[in-house]
Every structure is written in C-alpha cells, then in structure tokens.
Image (cartoon, rainbow, N blue to C red; front, side, top):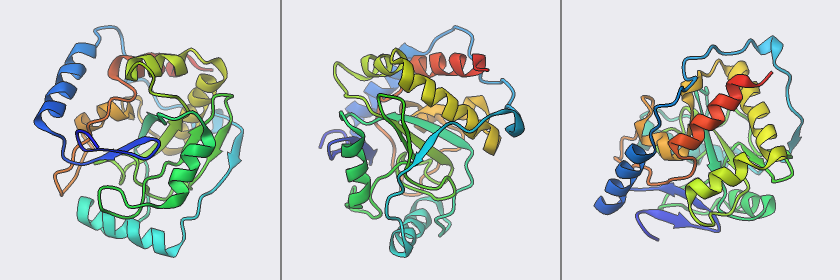
Length: 241
C-alpha cells in the first residue's frame, strides 16, 4: 500500500493520500493540462439517434446484502442512505491488469477496501478485443471512484499499468477495437442519461469535479486517464457519428 492505494491485482479506491502523493498529483495535473481545444461544452446527442452498442451481460452478485452495504457507505460518505444511482458523470479507468477475468474476479469477491464494504466494482469492463461486459445496472451505485460513486458510472478498460498512466492510456487510445467500443459505449451513456461532455472524466480528474463530495475527507490519488488523454478521448467522442 502506498499513498493510500490498495492493490488487489488492480489499483482501486483510495483514502487520504500522503502530502507527497497529493503534491505529485497536483503537479501532474498542472503539467498535463493542455491549451488545445476541448469539446467540453458540446451538446448531448439525442437518445433516439444513438444506437446501443453490443453489450454482453455478465452481472456480478449484488444482492440485498451488498446493496445495504452500499447504502450504508453512501450515508457515511455522501449523507444519504441509498444504493440507487442517477448518473451524471462517466469515469474512465484502466484495470492495471491483463485480463477481463481477473478484474471481474476482484469485483465478485466483495472484499473489504480501506476497511469498508462493499468491495470495489465498476459498471462495465471493456476487453482488449473490444467486447463490452456489463457487470452492474447503471441504476446501482458501486465503489470505483472516491467522491463520485453517488453520481458516476465506472468504465474499466483492460490494460496493464506498464511504464505509467500516460503510456497505459495511449495503449488504449491506439488499440482500435477497444477504443472504438469505449467511444460507442460512452456516446450511448451520454445520450441515455444526458451527461455533458465535461462530465466524461478520467479517474485522475475526479478530485477536481464540481460534483465531487466525500464527508469523510477521502481523496483520490490515482493517475489513470490523465487530463490530456481524456481530452483526446473527448475529441474523438465529439467526432463520432
């Protein structure tokens, strides 16, 4: 464990980072900000005009007990005891692992994370071959991003951490089937839930979201999907027809 990160085959939810980790994250964010055009204000596509991509249902166990755990977590961190999700944000992640099966196994385990239940999970995993797996209903909250689990849909993309977050993001952006699937899925979710382009973010951007909230004072120290890489993703998303 370093900087509050928990390693379970994947890098996941975080707690209070060290001062060094916080400073490093701030410096990285400033260094990676780009002055190139960012289509953050682009209009949300009409739901009737956006086809649903092919999605394989692979739902993980998330019954009454785990929903109750999520409601209790939400009460502690967001002030309202509910497991129901009304999405306003899409958060991009990568798994820091090499397979869909490995990531899904972590979600199924419902192991304590930072001493709390439920365990971590995400709504979708996109494999390297472009297969989109849905693990949870987009109406159910799960733990994938500190401070935004009450507002966000989480999308994981299978990718090893390798030489660092920017390198890993670029591998996904250059992997044709996987990135096309991700773009189509996010376009569909934006249309379905009227999500603004500026609310399509990377995990590394979560602390700066205007919708960020955590009553326990937790913060993210993740760097998956850095600002400049999300801007590339948004530009491709805006150009998608």
